[in-house]
Every structure is written in structure tokens, then in C-alpha cells.
Amino acid sequence: MFQGVQCVIQGADHIKANKICQDAAKICEQDHFAVASVSDGHGGAKYIRSDIGSKYAVEAAVETVCAYMEDYGRFTDAIRKNPDYILNQMECHFITKWNNMIEIHRDAHELTDAEREILDKVKEKENREADWHSWYGCTVLCAVMAEGYSYGMLVGDGTLAVVYEDGTVSIPIEDPYSVANMTSSVCDKQCKDKFQHYYEEKQPLSMTVSSDGLCKSFGSDESLKDYHLRLSYMMNTEQFVNSLEKNLQNFTQKGSGDDISVATVFSPEVINEKKAMLFQLIEEKKKLEQERKAAEEKRLAEVKRQMEEARQKEERRRQEEERRRREEERRRRDREKSRRELERRHREEMRILEERNRIQQEKERETLRKMQEDQRRRERELQERERRVARQQADIEKRMRDGLAAVKQMTLEGAAYVAEKIGTGAHNMEEILNQKMDEQTDLLIEDVNDMMETEETEE
View 1 (cartoon, rainbow, N blue to C red):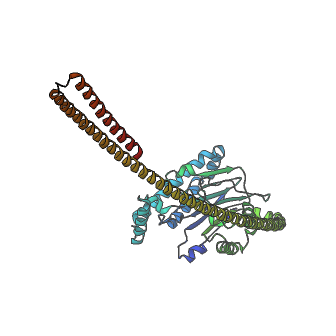
View 2 (view 1 turned 180 degrees about the vertical axis):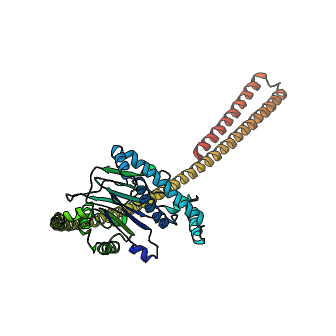
View 3 (view 1 turned 45 degrees about the vertical axis):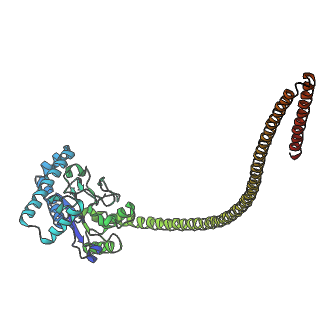
């Protein structure tokens, strides 16, 4: 009732870098259900055995589903009653099985010298030793189509696409933790908390799981969904596997360059019944795609026109800014020139002013020097005059002393004469003595006056 197809393509970039393919895919076809699983091994340096981890991941996923659905009737009743509980149990079972597989492989295969060298570089770079589980790091996606219902699980990036009988395409679950180049991993310690799953009471036309190398080759989710619709139309044909392989080769060479793994399950009877509808829908999609392309080309042309207008406007703005910049630069140079001229004039004025001040100060110093010399000369003249006056006064005093001594001597002589002539008479003697004293006194006074007049005349 159900069929499956798997295909794994080594990435174009991996071929160029001589790097092994790290993707894996596996399908399982049973009477009442079919399972499709893919896994993408991580490409980081510490994931030295991710290609082995991815192979074990698809094996563990398929074996887990088959083990749970071995008693199909009982499983169907259980999952319809409580799908979340059953799927949680299956996820735990998968994690345990995968860890057991990689542990057995680790114990049976010691690290090679090349692997040790890689891990030593990682340890040196990250300053810690990588957990050995990370050697096998990978993602996993699993889709199960059964009679009357379907479900899926995943950890990490990739795409689980469901095509329904009416031709609609859905991507029911995605990994919310996968951002940019970061993705969830089966080797994470919190792997159970990062599992995403869904369940629905509907049997779709086909279910396809693929690694991120496929979705990265498309520009939009709508294009990716259209591809899965065309993929469903090609199913149940002899050339399907070859066409799928060629498509994936083209995608990795012209698109992502990464490894691409695809696994799909479908119902051949339903596919045959819906062939005409799928063909018509694909043709409509093609027309819509052509219209979208035409609209996109028109939009791109409009965007290009707007960009050209914006470029021209920007060019005009740039030219205007350049003109303004040159004008501002010219003004700045003029201002700088004016400033330098003002500074030059200011320096010249300051120089002239300083020169004038220097000359004025020299004149003032010369004037002060002359005044000081005049002052010193007048002081010397005054001192000399004072000394001369002092000498004159001393001479006058000496002459007065000499005159008084002479008067005294004359007086004494007169007294002696009087004493000798006492006989002549006291009255005549006294008159003669007074007359002589008066004469001497007048002479002395005249001499003093003559000396005073002489000094005044000299001054």
C-alpha cells in the first residue's frame, strides 16, 4: 500500500574540499505504514564522526517506529487516544537507542591519530575538552504515513513537507532553536526538550523529509512547497529516482553546495488517482509561478528603476554635497587667509606698538636719568653751598672772635693807658675809652655786613 524512496547526494562544496558526505537517509515500507528518515551530520571540527552519527540516527529512528508499530492495531488505538504521550515515549526510546549505538561504536573504534589531532586543536581553541557524544553530532527528521493518520518528529534544521490529496502543501513542524548556522543536535544533553513532533488524523498524499541542503537551495518557502508538489507528481514512475537524483545534483551545484538527503513515502494508488489533479494544479502553479516571475521581474525592474533614480538622486546629492564641501572649503580657506592676515596685521601693530613703547620707555628712562643727574648735581651744589656757608660762618665767627679779642686787647691797653694816665682825669679817660670801643664796634659791624653782602652776591 505504501512505498518509499531515498536519495543522498554529496555536496558540491564537499567534493571540492575532499570532504566525506555527512548525510544519511533510510526508509521502511510495511503493510500498514511507511517510515522515512534523514539525518545531517554536523560540519564543525569537533564532530569528527558525524557521518557515522547520521547513519545511526536514521537507523535508530526507523527501528524505533517499527518497534512501536509492530502491533499496529494496539499502537493505532494508543496514539489516537494520546498522541503527545506516545510520541514523547518514542523520542525517549530513539535517544536511548542512538546513544547505545554510538557508545558501542566508540568502544569498538579507538580514535585515530588524525582524530586526536583535530580534537587537540578544538580543545586548545575552546579551552575545554569536547564531550565524546559530540563526535557523532547530527540532526534527525522522521515522517510516518499510516492508514488514516500520519505523524512526524525532528531535532535540528531540515524540512518535513506534507502534500495532501487536495494538492496543498504544509510544513507542519520546524526547529525553533535553529538560527543562522546554529542548530539543535541529537548529541545535545537537552535533546529530549528540543524534539518537535506533530500528529494528525489524516492520510496525506506524500510525506518528504530532507536535510537543510535542499531548503537552502530555494529562495522562499513557497518555491520549496511547489517543488514538493512536483515531486509528488513524479512519484510512482520509473524515472522518479533518476529524476530526483539529477534534481538534487543540480541543487547542490547551483544552490546550497551542501550535502542533500531526501526520503519520501507515499501511496501509489492515491498518487495514480490524483495524477490528473496534480498535473492541473502543477500547471496552474507554473502559470502562477510565471505570473509571479513576471510580477517579480516587473517588481525588480521597478526596484531597479527606483534604485537608479535613487542612485542618480544620491549622485546629485553627492555632487551637491561635494560642491557645498568645496564651497565651504573655499570659504574656510578664505577665512583662514583672513585670519592669518589679521594675525599678521595684529603682530605688525603689536610690533610697532612695542617699538613705540620701547622708544618711549627709552626716552622716559633718558629723561629720568637726566632728572636724576640734575637732582644729584643740585644735591652736590647744595652740599657745596652748605659747606661754603659753613666755612663763611666759621670765618665770620673767627673774625668776630678775633675782633672781640682785639677789642678786649685794646680795652685792656686802654685800661692800662688810663691807669697810666689816671692822673689826667677819670672823666677824660672814660670818654676816650668809650669812643674807642664805639669805633672798634662800628668797624667790626661794618666788616660783618661787608662779609654778608659778599656771600649774598655770590649766591
